[in-house]
Length: 368
Image (cartoon, rainbow, N blue to C red):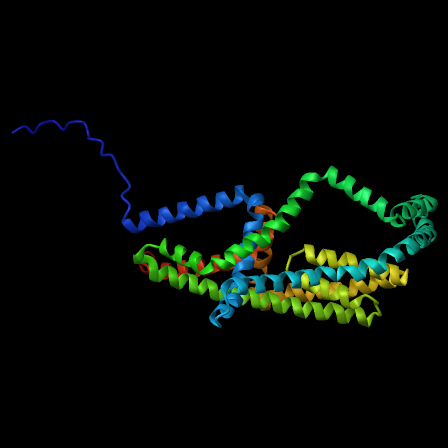
C-alpha cells in the first residue's frame, strides 16, 4: 500500500501563556514603572508635597501620642507643627550672629587680606613667569560700595535682584508657603489616608502587604533615629573642634553645620563656607584656613566612613558604597528632591529586594 505523500508542514503559532501570578507581577511592575516616570516628570512640581509627606511621616507619631492622651487632634497637629517650625527657625537663626559679626569684619579685613595676598603670592608666582597683581584700590572701593551700604541701598539691590530672578524667588516663596500647608493637612488626615491606602490592597494580598509595610516602617524609623544621632554627634564635634582652635563663632557655626548635614552636600558646604569666613576674618592669616581644614576634614572622614555607614547605612541594610551611589543616582534623576528622598526610598528598595531574594531562594526555579 502506498502511503499518501506528506503535505506541507503546518505552522503552529506559539503564544506565551502567562500564569495568573506572572500576570499580576507584570501588572505591579508596570504600575511601579508608571509611578517612577510620573515622579521623574513632575519632580519640580512635587517638591513641596514630597517634603511635606516626608515631614508628616516623621512627625505623625508625636501627633498620635498627643491624640491618644485625649488632646484634640487639631490642637495636636498645630502644636507639633509649630514646634517643628520653631526648631527649624532656631537652626536658621544660628546664622544671624555669624553674619552680624562677620559683615563688619569683612569690611575691615578684605582689603588687608588682599594686600597680604598681593605681597606674598605675587612674588612667588613671578618666579614661574606668572605676573598677577590684585587691584587693592578697586577691592576697597567694591567693599565700601556693597558692604557699607545703607538699608535703602540694600533694599533696592534686593528688589532689583528679585526682578531679575523673579521666577526663582516666587518658586522659593511658594514652596515655603506650601510645605506647612501640605504638612498640616497630611497630619490632620493621616489615619484616614492610611486606612484609604490599605483599602486599595486586594484582600488576598493584605497580609503580605501589611508585613512589607511594617518592615519598611521599622527600617525608616531606624534611618531617622540614626540620622538624628549623626547630626547631634557632628554638631558637638564641629563646635568642640572649632572651639579648641579658639574660634569666637565655634558654637553657632558648629551646631549649624552638624544639623544641616541632614541635607547631603549642601549642609556641609554651607557650614564649610561659614567656617572659612569666620577663620579668615578672625585670624587674618592661614591659621584660620588650616584650622578649618583640619576640623572639617576629620569631621567629613569620620562622617563618611564611620558615622553614616554605621549609624544609618547598616541600620537600613546598606553598605557605604550603596549609600554614596543612592545619593548620586537619586540626585541626578530628581535633583534636590532626589537627594532628600534617596536614603528613605533606598531603604524601602532594600526591604523589597530582601523579600524578593527570599522568595527566589524558596522557588522551584532556584531549587531545581
